[in-house]
Structures are given as structure tokens and as C-alpha cells.
Image (cartoon, rainbow, N blue to C red; front, side, top):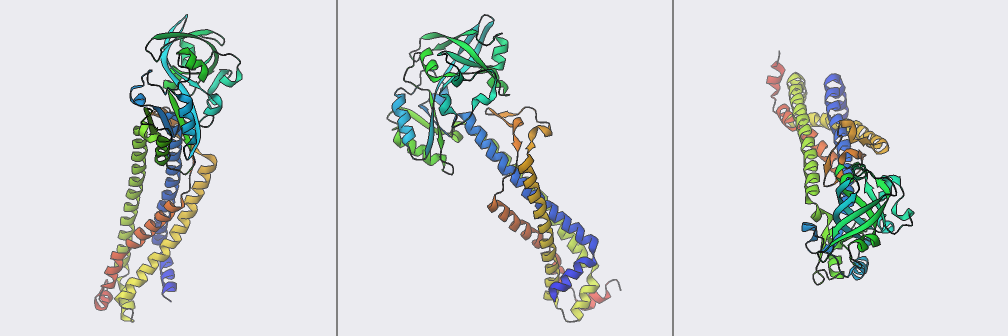
Length: 414
């Protein structure tokens, strides 16, 4: 009986009910949709950051990451590579020779960040051939001295495919070395810093160029999905005897903490934004219910006189709130889930918001396309929070209604 009366009461004041229902439904739907976009966006940032760092875990000579010094190399590279691959949770170990040097042509010189890679192993992390604008990739040439340069370098040095370039760099023993390469490809990533300095060559060619046969600068590591990078890194330290061999093992979060901080701040702002929205909605609903109590004083007084005591009046008002909340959250869930499906299917490129260039730690956010990721735990927690806030906003008005004396209520506006 109480539920039937409460339901009828809601629609006796249709405008007020629709206003409150739409406010809760829109806020709840927006909350679900925003969390879906936020979770997917942050996951993309994490993936891009790990790719930009060179792997989920990085292994190199102790002190290399801080100084980038060319004499800090993994000396017994083949043995260390096998040890890393054997560590629990490791799915791929990606060897690299990284050279900071100067590339020269008849037109001038440019700073170069040259990576000597194994194209097949590198695919475990990324496919750099996707960014190839001209020429052939490293695994598509039979030359033993190929080099792929960033588009900006090629333009500045006035190079064409097949041209020779000279690399000047420092050998592990401190001597200056010069090596000849032939341009076999042009790469363009869209990241200005990368396109102005990036170069790729085969691992063997890079090692030969600086006289570092059998040595590596870095081993990038990919791990089993779902495993914590910290635990896998600990296993790698044990397997490779990192302290004894002078190695440093870092997770990508340790390597680029500024990206971790950026994601945490962005995540915090998302939840602050949602809290502000619900605070506004909660106050609006509480105010609306309180005004409704004042408008319905005679009604509550009559119900009280007919035998429905203060607790019953409060129960009636809370039942109305419960029904309205259930209706609003049903509509809000449909809106939020529909938004999730649409975003997951079509995506929302950040470029539509006017973000043309935004780089953090080598990650180009302007190129990200936000989709939506459904996290059941977060959605359930958000649903409980919305229901609690909405119903809680009616507690004070319900208490006020329960305190109305029948004699005073019957004289109200009388």
C-alpha cells in the first residue's frame, strides 16, 4: 500500500518529479560515461608510455638511465639476455644498441639518437615500420649498413634514398669513431622531437659502428598481462644477478615518473569533477524535497490525523525518493551504457577538442583516440554512491516532515 501511494504521489507533481529524475539520471549517466573514457584513456597512456620508454621493464648498465653515457654498456650481452628471458613472467626481451652521435651529409650535420634494433624482436613492443614514409624497413633490405632517419633530419640534410651519411659517435673506450651508412628509409612519427633526432639501423650495424660487438645498451622487457611489473623486475634482478653484473633494472614507471604523476593528477581531477557534480545534484535534490515538504504540509498533517504517524510520513517520503532514484538510475544507466558503447565503437579523437600538439615523456596525446572501458567494480561502486547520495539528500526533508504536528499542519495556509 505504501509503495502504491508513494508512486502515485510522484506523478501528482509531474514537473518536480521529472526535474529531479532527469538531474539524477543525467549525472549518473555522465559519471559512468566519464569513468569509461577515463579508464580507457589512462590505459592508453600507460601503454604508450611503456612503448615510449622501450618496454614495461628496462635493463641496462647501472647509472645509464640517469646519464645516458655511451660507455655504460651491458658487456656480456648474450648471457644477460638469456638470463632476462628466463626470468618468470617475461614474454619477450628486446635488445638494443643506442648511440648518441652526429650524422653528416654534404649539406651539414644533425644530432642523432640512433637505435640499433632487432626488427623481429622489436615487434613484441611496437611496429616502427608503420611510421615509414619512404623506402624500405630494416628487414626489407639486404644492405649491411642501412639507416632510417626522421623526416626532419632528411629534409635538413637534403638527403634522398640511397645517399650516404656519416655517423660520428664515441666508442665505449672513449675514442671517436666514424661509420658510413646508406639511407634506406624515412620515418615520420608526428612527434617533433623524435622526427628531428631519430634514426634506426640493424643491431649488428650499430654495434660495429662504435666497436661494441657483443655489447648492448638496453634490454626492453615485455611481461605477461596481469602481472605486476615490480614483481617481474624483482625476478629479473635475481635471474641476471644484477648487482654482481653492474646492471640496473627499472620498471617504466620508475624510468619516467613524470608520466605516472600526470596520469595520477588527471585521474584525481576526474573524480573531483564527479564529486562536484554530485554535490551540486545532492543539494539541489535536498532543496527540492524540502520545498516539497513545505508545499505538502497540509497533506502530511491530514495523513498524520488519519493515523499515519511521523515515522510513517518520513517513510512515505523516503519511499518516494527510493522509487524516483530507481527510475532515474535505470534511465541513467541506459544513457551511460549507450555512451560507453558508442565511444567504444567510434572513439573520440582528442583532436576534436583542439588539442593539436601535446607531448609528455615522448607520448603524443594529440593522436590518442579515446574509447571507453567498462570496469564493473568501478561502475558498481559509482552506482552505490549515487544511490546513497540521492537517498541521503532526502533524509533531512523526511525528518522535517516527521516532526510536523497535526494541529499545526492542518492550520498551515489555512
